Amino acid sequence: MNDITGFFSSVLVTLITLLPIINPLSTAILLLSISEHLTKKELNRQIVFACIYMTVILIVFLLAGHFIMIFLGYLFPELE
Image 1 (cartoon, rainbow, N blue to C red):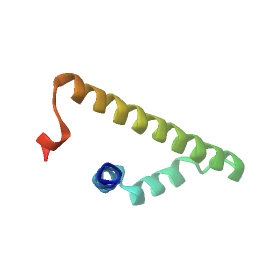
Image 2: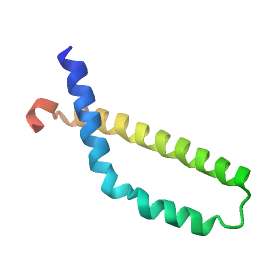
Image 3: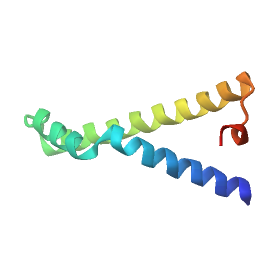
């Protein structure tokens, strides 16, 4: 149970850390300004693909980072 709690705690900290980097307010305004020529269907399709790409990229880097840390010999309790 402690491992699950630690995992969800790490995920929450990661999401909170990424929030200022992603900056959803300015990103939404940017998306609306560069997609004025798109129809509603095309805009929704672009948004869905962007979310899929972002999710895949974050998962790949999460897993790669975890394995790199293990390979280098860093244990997570040592980083706290």
